[in-house]
Amino acid sequence: MPESTIIALNISTLKCPVSFGGDFGILPLDAAPVPDVLSTSVKTKFYALLIPLAGTGELILDGNILEMRRGRVFFINYSQVLRLSASATFRGKLILFTRSFYNLIYTGNRKIKNDTAFSGLPAFSDFRRGDFADFLATVSDITTEASRQQALNRETVCLLLKVTMLKFIRASGGDNYIGFKTNRTLAYVEAFETLVNHNFRQLKRTSEYAEKLNITPNYLNSIVKDRLDLTAEQYIRNRVILEAERLLLNTSLSVTEISFDLGFSDKSHFGKYFRKATGHSPNRFRHKFVNGQ
Image (spheres, rainbow, N blue to C red):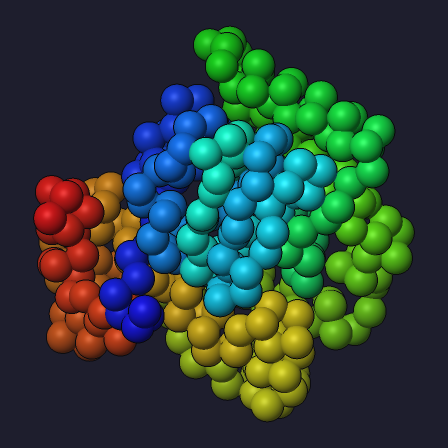
């Protein structure tokens, strides 16, 4: 399927029975077939943990066919293309969360300081039986806490989510997990991600970020591609488009106002940039998702 026809999927679109707005959600997968929106190819605008509990099926992630079975937990990254196909007996759970939700609590610990620890994570981890039971216990705690209407439940869920991700990372390789190794390359990539998050409105070229990091654009592209499986330009564009989509779907700002907010010189430049990335004009994107047409 051409990329231009693949819709971008937000957490709010899935209408999770347990959720915190568009930042966090838990979606049970307890009935066949899987939700229609997940049975066609969609591009994620969130992180997710897919946890099969019974039955079998296939997760097609960026064109790779992965077998779903109990004890195998999948990590889904931003801007991946996914599709689910499950047996009639399949049961599972999706935990979905945004960068901002995961970064709600800063612990001071490098290994879990923010979502940059996810760089290079494998698509899935196979848990040993006892470890999987322990993992599910934490997932149950998240579900219980997220269902409560109590003070600080968002913060509590965020901390439990960090525990869940650490258990996933440990199952994928423990202390040898490359994302935990401190080296110059990883430091550059983390600094680049931070710079993009703070400056994407003003700076949209790889060379501008390379200059701030005192490295060449080619080297920046190489290390970002190695760590994130995206070019630096793609990473910058994805951040701009993510913010553009958020403003189009969640505010009443005009397209012209949004274009200026995102640092474009005019509406036309923004429109071309947005269409190249999504296959839709900003107005068409807003109409399609807000009105469901």
